[in-house]
Image (cartoon, rainbow, N blue to C red; front, side, top):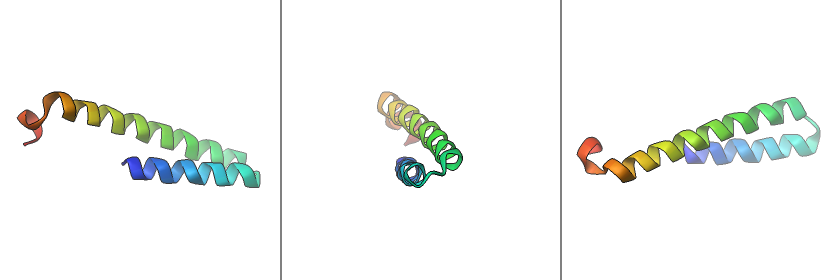
Length: 54
């Protein structure tokens, strides 16, 4: 999931440089959402560890 967030962020930067601001904004928003979901799941796995996921 973090990989997709990074890929979408890089694509957003490329599209922003090329002038496609609408597409760049959409990719940036999707990348931000995926990053926060990844961070939330990562923190849950740190807190609960193997009790839930193992």
